[in-house]
Length: 133
Image 1 (cartoon, helix red, strand yellow):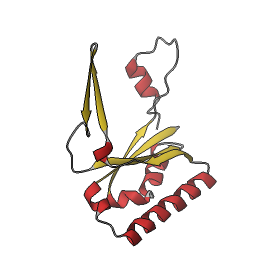
Image 2 (image 1 turned 45 degrees about the vertical axis):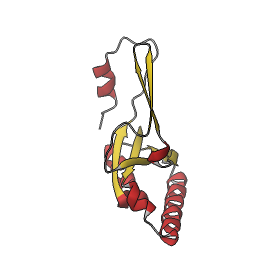
Image 3 (image 1 turned 90 degrees about the vertical axis):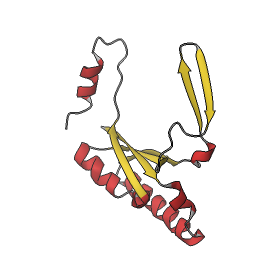
Image 4 (image 1 turned 90 degrees about the horizontal axis):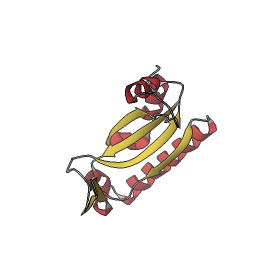
């Protein structure tokens, strides 16, 4: 089953890092990704640009609103993600605990919902399907 590991951190703490600290973090992340690839766990992942570069789009009916910046002002911002393949939530949490950037914030782990074309299943039935741990 696929899980999305969303990495949240205080961007100011990351920006305050020395060049050496930043390089060590990047190297740790790259090594961890390589190990997940070797184990057949890694599906995808990326670091995100600063929240200052974000644009928020809201569609209400036919009206589209665009705002520079993030949707909400929070201490921690979404800084990146890993999409992984795991046997269940326990394994996904174990993998997420090893993500180096997690040392600077928190990691939200969520199962990926598989959508089925032309199904009569309700959204609650689909949600239950994703939680078979």
